[in-house]
Every structure is written in structure tokens, then in C-alpha cells.
Image (cartoon, rainbow, N blue to C red; front, side, top):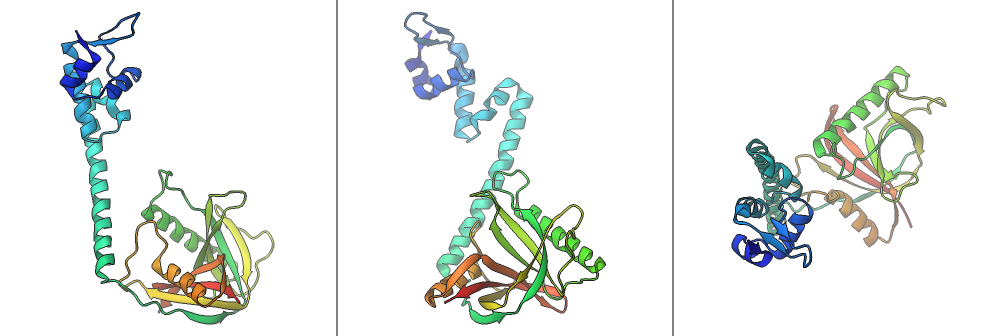
Length: 280
């Protein structure tokens, strides 16, 4: 029988790790002195200890350790799942490194042309959709884009059936959700010629209507083909350039009045423009 210190020295596990594995039932001592509470280990425990050591060295989450230790098929499944996670993480890191290379080289540096214009008064109808958080298992760029496209399509069809076919390009805005400090909503909108009747709705969607009032605004646009470096999780550089321009010109802005508008050519979406109402 070995003391916890001797066992730690032989297996490469720290005293802290051994105590944690004991508490979690992953590697309990062969015996514990009832008076001193000293832990004692046996040579038969070398194998599970070494497996735990290798498991942690590979970065496998400790939560997967019980399955890993249970039986060979379960252990193989744990390793297969971890390899998938590692591959995804390596892909994310490679993409982030490529982004850093482009930022450092300045190859994708874009000169944003910010213009000032007067927005005309415009009725609109929009689908309100709660933006999923990072901890939402359904969250993701692909799933979000698909859901947004569904919202725009469903709203367009409903407006056409109501005889109020959209009069221009789509636009969207992000705003804080009511009664929440952290949740946000995406409003997917189409401009329309006249107000909709009270109670108008689209089955399966939350619909809101309103009016864009005539007011000065700053606008910047980009085409999808433009070489622009976008850092994952950061607002598009065009939006940041717009806000920086407003600050340089001493203009006040209301982020809730920021709209991303589809840039259309011959019925095809070729880019976006960002507009925000400003005040002096």
C-alpha cells in the first residue's frame, strides 16, 4: 500500500487531482484510515490512474471520465467525440489565424465611404425573432441565416396576399428585447405602401408594423465581393466605420435606429448598406 504522496509521485497525478478524483468517485483510495483519514493506494490502481492522467493530458473534459473508465466501447466513443471537438476547434483557430494575418498585412483594408442623406417616411412590416445566445445548442451562423431567410420569405408572401406587396429592398435591425438586460431581437422588415389593418398577422410568426420617419441619416454600403476582413463575433466593420464617422462629425446616434438594408441589382442581393438616424 502507498501513501497519497507516493502514489502521486509514481502516477504523475497531483495531490489535488487525486483528492478530486476521490470526491467524484473516479479513483477512490484502496483504503482510508478511519482515524487519520490518510488515503492509501494499491498497485492495482495504477492503470485507472494512468488512464485519467492521459485523459486530462489530451484535454478530454472531466465530465466524460466516467464513460471513459466504464468499458472499452464507451472509452472509444469518448475519444471519437473528443477528436471531432478538437478538429472543429483547430478549424476555428486556423480561421482566426488567417484573419489575423489579413489584419496585419492590411490586404483587406477597406476605405469606407460614409454619406449623409435624408430618409423618406416609409411604412414597414417586420417579423420579430429572438436572437439565440451562444449557449443555445441551435445557435450558429448557418441556422440563423436560414431562419432569417424564412422570416423574410414568409412575410413577403403574406404581404403580397394582402395586396400590400413590398415596395423596396428588405432591411433588418437589432434591438434589446423588452424586459431584459441581455436578450436581443432581430426585426426582419419589408417596406410597404400603406399601413396594414389592425390585428394583421402571419401565422407562426410574431409580426410588428411601424413607420420610418423622415430624418437625416448616415449610410455606408459594401458589396459581398468586396475584400473585407470580419472577425468572428465582432460587428461588421462597415457598422463600426459608420459609428466612427458619426462621432468624428459630432453627430448623435441611436443604435436602435440602425438598419441593415439589402443592396439589390436586377432583383438580386449583391451587398448591404447600413444606415443610422443622426442628430446634431
